[in-house]
Image (cartoon, rainbow, N blue to C red):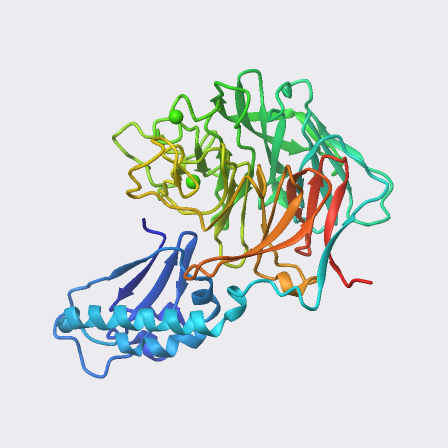
Length: 480
Ligand SMILES: [Ca+2]
Ligand SMILES: [Ca+2]
């Protein structure tokens, strides 16, 4: 599975900004491609001319491009001079380049211990506090910040309302931003208005997206804020982008979020019923059991990003699919620093899992539940299946609620850790994973409420949507 890759070009454009060497046609250009874009490394001058001018490139696949590689780019750049050879010596260059790459990886992994060590609880405890004492919500299932500088938060109520209020602990009033209860089917426990995403250019275009259950399908729709009131959406502005038939009432997915690439990602469950009876998880001709990716800025109503894994395929696979083999990825998020897509995939009988989702990845369901064979129950073919970076058994929790990588400032011990929880038990954990070494997991809190979702405000602080009707906030607990 291609996640990231390294490309080496023997012609470096001047635009790289490493004068004067960058203007030298003998320079190397090295970029590390991540799923969401390229990051330039360093051009490097040669000391003798290449023997011919045939362009070449080299691509090295890197699974889970290490977090530490990003963090240590600049430190690692100086070691890339090992890659400086010429087109006439391409073979030796490749060997040397690969070894230098892994040298950089090893260096980087060693130099950024914080990405991997378990969260340190020796000096600080962790707690939750009711974030807005005077506000209560009915089955809140999502919390979003529009990133428009307005210091407002938006909470999604499952029955079909979006509530807006000032992000202040003393706030004592809220407004109904959108009420589409008449269009939303929330008859089933997992049905309703499930996800909200503001367009990255919300400030200028006023577009936001909602994912909800209709009669026998789930819909992805675009709405628009009203012309005169920033606290009121225009319910008549709905434009349906996707309508996905749901054979059962459960496993509808729900998260929608824009990635760092500006595309919209949509979590879709396997269609429901125990054990994926319709075998949607492994069926790429079905949108079910997948995370989808679409470009909402071009086309009508959208276009397929050209680098989607099945774009232009001739096998009948759905081109919207970004990754598949998922059971019910109820919540996923992007780490704004690494660009990684973290998902919590709700398990069947035994195992809850955390996945880092890659383009074209097959996350196993229902061949596997977590790292165990499911169908068949033993001896399953695991070829090309991507296993979770973390999982826990049902003795620990019974329904994972995916969260966010903490990038706030109030709790420095958690920076870079993936904060997630369990709907049933109320436990909240911090998971660290650097893309290379086994993940480490630390239980932070055993809360006494059902955790339906997490959310992040403009400061990167983490909130918890709970079925006690309150929004809670993750806080450092200095203790008695
Ligand atoms: Ca099945
Ligand atoms: Ca899986």
